[in-house]
Amino acid sequence: MNVISKRSLILALLIGVLSGSLVGCFPVVVGSAVVGGLVATDRRTSGAQLEDEGIELRAASRIRDNVGDRVHVSVNSYNRRVLLTGEVPNIQDKLLVEQIVARVDNVQSVVNELAELGNATLTQRSSDALVTGRVKAALVDAKDMYVNAFKVVTERGTTYLMGRVTKREADRATEIVRSTSGVQKVVRVLEIISEDELRNMLPQPAVDAKTR
Image (cartoon, rainbow, N blue to C red; front, top):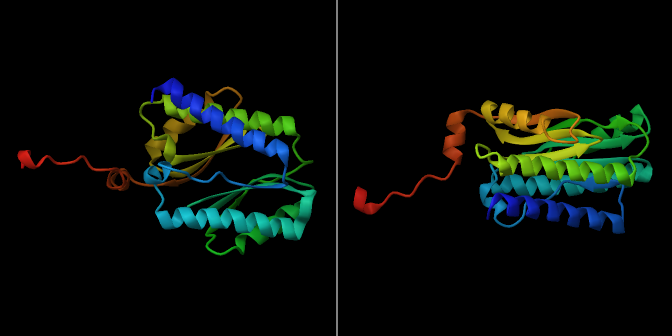
């Protein structure tokens, strides 16, 4: 698949997700699930991936049950580390949501980026979705990056990067994201690994029996 096709696929998927949100907008949003072949290139174990999906679903459900629709919270979990973004009316709700999520099974830590503001408009959320699409496309275009190593979240023009990456990858991704149209700020919620750890994660080249 060429670069243009990859970019088109990413943007098409984003438009599909956004279109679905127009049908029924829920105040609590769970992070995007890993699908198809992406599982094979994810740097989390398969168990961690399943746990992250479960964390997002359980956290969103408990927030709805306890806080209702007076908040707009996006829940994204990566390797059991949860990022909370969105809007809450006051500091009490901000702390309450964090406490609710921290008590969810398998959650190791919570990064609370909730803003004490009125809920974002549909136009603002649409703009954030488009920025996320541009960021993913820019990471695909960068030949020295593994785009599937990152989870990208954008809220009110701030782009959050999640993932298990080396310092080199983190710095390079930050450089790329900062230069992407629509990004006002970059926040790294990354787990830094060593270059040796990265090499052990990557598929090893097949050895031809004739060359042994």
